[in-house]
Each structure stands twice: as structure tokens, then as C-alpha cells.
Amino acid sequence: MHTRKVGPFDVSAIGLGCMSLSHGYGPIRTREQSEAVLLGALDAGYTFFDTAALYGLGHNETLVGEVLGPHRDRFVLASKCGATVGGVREINGDPAVLKATCEASLRNLKTDVIDLYYLHRWDRRVPIEDSVGALADLVAEGKIRAIGLSEVSGETLRLACAAAPIAALQSEYSPWTRNAELGGLQACRELGVAYVAFSPVGRGMLAGGLTDPAQIGPPDFRSHMPRFQGEAFTANARLAQAFAGLAREAGCTPAQLCLAWLLDRDPIVVPIPGTADPDHMRENAAAADIRLPPGIAAKIDALVTPATVAGPRYNATQQSTVDTERAPGEA
Image (tube, rainbow, N blue to C red; front, side, top):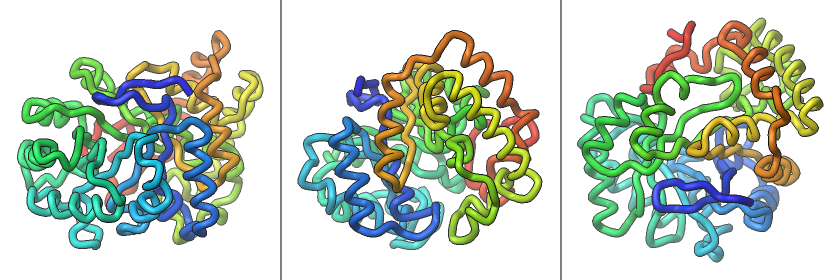
């Protein structure tokens, strides 16, 4: 797989989001399933793996550490702090908490250093400069190599960059979530920061296969998201069917079309799709070699717009935890 830059690192153009193996998308996967995805990803050319202390409250970091630890020299490792305290979910950017979380993550991941360490959410009770300063201390101590931020606006990114070098901004970006284009992506270009795109296939909706809200009942966290509820789900499923038609025209799968669209959007973008299916993992990797046929990007932009996507990406409670630019219609 060809590479892109994230801070000082050359990483596979498509990375692997590891969350779905432990958290968010239904039951925790078996160890055998998880090993098939993680080890298979190494063989498929992935060199960028993304986890967090929040995912399974330590389960995902421990899984990644145990399975990939023996291959630590083959990949760039990213994790996150600031959304847990002592193994409990809580947004907290206190410097002491961030440093304690890092120590626990190092143990879970079975490594001496985390390559890219994100502030998972900005705790507005703590100045961003203070939280970033704690991460800069971890760089100086050799416990992390580079700093990232997740779900913050371009304005907040600029403040953070004035306090310490920032390697990456991670947030949701896909054909149906364009908040990045409201300011964050431009700030990254100006500041030399990579844009790491999570949920690049619309949390599965644009990948095809979702036809009934019953497919995502609890404990799947999408059941609490407005785009996956009631009439919005029905409208978005119809949109996904039309998107699949564009994928057929492009000669690829819908998930591959999402990823190829992102790679074509800007060279600073690195998508990190997650999956618990080894076949989907390999399908996603193959998207790195797809070149969009002329006119397909324009057709996507005409089909998937704020007017055709039903519902905001988060409910009010979820939205209160993020600092990103808001698309039209988002509260």
C-alpha cells in the first residue's frame, strides 16, 4: 500500500480503526475474530493502527498489545486519552489524569512508547494549552512521539499548535459527513497537520447492507444516533442505495468508493475504517489503489448533500462532547 505522512511518520494510506473489535458496534468480538483482523491487516499492508483507552475501557488497547506486540516494529501505533479516568468513561483533560492514562495505556499496549497520542475529547474546563502541555511533557519524557487532537475545531487546533507541535487532527469525514470542510481541513493544510478520518464509510451506512433499524439495536451505539433512527434511517438507506449505484459505475464496492473519494479529496487525509470482518478489512485496503473515474466525485457531491442526508450526526448529548464545526441543521 502506498503511504501518506502523519507527523514524522510514513503510514499506509488507509489505516485500521480498531474500536469495533471491542466497543460501539455490538458485542465484543472473539479473540479468534480479532486476531484474524489485526494480523491479517499487517499482511495486507496496513502500517497504521488506531485504538484508545476508551474502547472497551482498556479491552481494545490490551487486545492490540497482546496480538500486535510481537510485531511492534512493523506499524505506527496511535491511541488516545482524555475520555476516561481510572478505567471509567469521563471526559477529563486534567494534565495529571492524562499522564496517568498514558501510563496505563503503555502497560496495556505492551510498549515503551506510543507513536501518536491523541487528546480524545477536549475538556472545556481545562484550557486546551494545558492539556496539550501535558502531552508535550510526555513527548519530552519519551513516552509518546507525537501529539494528536480528536473532534476539535480549526480554531482550537490553532490554539493547540501555538502551545506544542500537533501531528494530526482526527474527526469524522466521509461523503455524508463534511464538517471537515467547514474549517478543520483548511486549518490542517495551513498548519501542516494530517487529517485522520474516522467513520469514513458513514458508520457502515454507505458501505451497504443496512436496510432495517433492527440491525443496529443496543448495544450498538448507532441506535442512539439520529441518522440511524426512524424515518431518517429509511431516507439514508435509500441514499445509500443510490450511492451503491455510483460505486457500480466506478467499478468498486460502496466502501471502496468512500475511501477512494477521501484519498482523492486531499493528500493530507488518512482514512481509518474499522471492521471486525477480515474480508471487509482486505476490501478496504484495496481501495488505496483505486483511481476515481472522471466525473464520479462530482456525482457524489451532487447526490450526498446536507439536504439529502437525514439527521445530524450526533444527538444533543453526543454533540455536547465535541468541538468541531457544525454542518447546517446541526444543533
